[in-house]
Structure formats: structure tokens, C-alpha cells
Image (cartoon, rainbow, N blue to C red):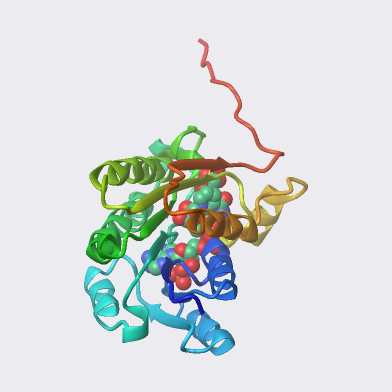
Length: 250
Ligand code: NDP
Ligand code: 8X3
């Protein structure tokens, strides 16, 4: 072990789960959080309680988040890196037909919870000249049909990252916004309410980004020399690119 500690949110699936594997393999201790306690326990069983600490809670529950933070065992307390990965998209309907409850859940998770855990951990990160890696999305920069509140929540993550950098000027704390494009995880399953066929169809033949690709990107950024900061990085599969504007005619 190298003595470094990362708190990885959304560690039960996709990017987060792959990032846990990457950092544990690299000698870090990891605090793994998410709602599905059984999946977090599997990480502890696989790697041992001295390497992985499971913190099962809903990111939208601030009291639960604070309790998990207060309950960190001493060997996991000196956090060097926060990977703000937990998040989700819900629905693909245009705004005028969207479900308001889904909008609120995305804002509560992708915006409010991300800001809350960042606020909670900032004193420790400043103390240790640590780092924050936020998982944003290309949807924060490129509008697409049905992206509405999801894309807006990721625009918040991108801009919050840049604003954090400015506020943290001179502290040595590094902040990065990673903005992935299409990646095959449980993302589309969640977005479509469990429609595996829709998920399979979206990724078929597209050679999408994998969870391991993003875990490797996070690992690379976290292990750069301390005088370097990657501000933003946008990553797409080769098969994906931006397309033009649309025009409605009479
Ligand atoms: P997954 O659905 O595979 O993983 C999402 C993770 O977020 C899960 O571990 C889930 O844990 C956690 N999570 C969601 N809601 C909550 C909550 N309320 N409390 C705690 N944890 C929560 O998706 P990805 O790995 O693809 O997504 C990870 C991040 O990457 C997200 O922020 C997503 O927006 C972003 N992203 C994804 C892209 C893609 O195409 N896949 C591209 C660009 C960005 P649990 O359900 O156990 O709580
Ligand atoms: C996920 C990428 O393009 O499906 O954030 O919104 S996209």
C-alpha cells in the first residue's frame, strides 16, 4: 500500500466499480460508496477491510452522508482524492413531456449531493493538498434531444470544477472535470428504467468507452506529478462525434 486514500462515489457499478479496482491494484486504500450495500460488501470481501471501506448510503441523504463521513475508520480518514462519480440520467423524453420527479432526482444526485460531499471533504483535501476528480459528461457541452436536465446537471459539474480550481488557487489542491461520451455501463439501463434491449441497441456496433477506459483516465490524472493539473478532459469513442444544428420549417 502507498498510504494514499481515495473516496470513490458510485462504486457499485460502471466507472466507479472499475476505478475501485484500478486504485486498489495501484496500492491505494479506497472508501467505496453507493446505495447497494451488497455490491460494496463484495468489494470488501475481495480486497479486504484494510484496503476497502464500504460506506453504503444514498447520496441525496445529507445526514447519512455526514454519518458515513464521521464513521470513517482511522486508516481511511486522511483522504487524498475525492472521485465524484455517483450520478445518473433518468428518461429521454423532451422537456415538455418529461417527468418532474426524474428531473428532481437528477438535480438532487448530480448537483446537490456532489456539491455537498465536496463541501464536506474540502477541509481534509486542503489540509493534504489533495485532489478532486469530477465525472461530468459531454452532455454538459453538447445539447441533444432528451438531454435537458441531465445535460444541465453536468454543465454544473463542469463549471463547478473550474470555479473550485479558482477558489483553491494556492492551496495545491487539484481539480479536474472528466467529460466522457458514450460509455457502456449500467447508465442506459438506469436511464430507461431497466430496458436491457434499449441499452444493448444503443451500444451495438459502436465500440463505446468502457468503464476501464475511464478508470484508467482517472488513475492517470490522479498520479500525474503534483505540479500538473488537468482542468478538463473530454473523451469520446472514435465512433461518436458532434453533429450539426436543427431547423424547424413552416
Ligand atoms: P452506472 O449506472 O453504471 O453507475 C452509477 C453509480 O452511481 C452507481 O454506483 C450508483 O450506485 C451510483 N448512484 C446513483 N445514484 C446514487 C445515489 N442516490 N446515491 C449513491 N450512489 C448513487 O453509470 P456510470 O458508471 O456510467 O456513471 C457514473 C458517472 O458517469 C455518472 O455521474 C454519469 O452521469 C457519468 N457519465 C456516464 C456516461 C456513460 O455514457 N455511461 C458518460 C458520461 C458521464 P447505487 O445505484 O448502488 O446507489
Ligand atoms: C452520458 C453521455 O451522451 O449519453 O453522460 O449523455 S450521453
